[in-house]
Length: 188
Image 1 (cartoon, rainbow, N blue to C red):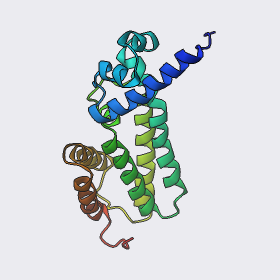
Image 2: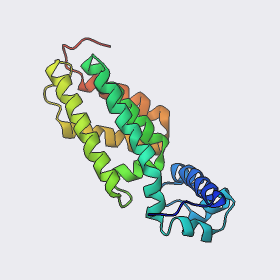
Image 3: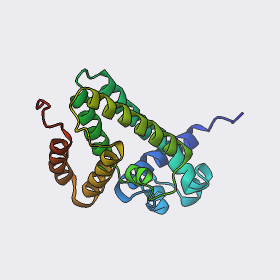
């Protein structure tokens, strides 16, 4: 049983989490802990009282970010058109990863991943595989496009987005979708 935090301690914890989200989004998961404490208006000691190490802070932030991936999959599953579902899932996933450097690092392995990131990666891969299979069965996806091919393309586009900004990956995504679409599939 853990004792509830005092009101001021709970406020400090929430401020630290909010500011850590911003710093990790901007700077990646190796973002400055001192900067997080400064932005939250607390000492570095207060940060360490709440989060004894960087991974504890990352672990506290990840569930909400990872839940967004599950939301993308749920929206894709509800979409009746297999091609639209696949494209929407990939676009939302890339949008999230390119907007959040920390999340991108967690998914691309540039930072030691916590167990929940590993589980989210497995869920995401399972969701993507199901969407790819559905698009194959509908005749919308090129027959020779493997799951690994698509994963590599998503990974490459996420890195493009991180290094050059959103417009570059969005423009390139259209070419990727055109290349993945089966030759006889209708355009959407």
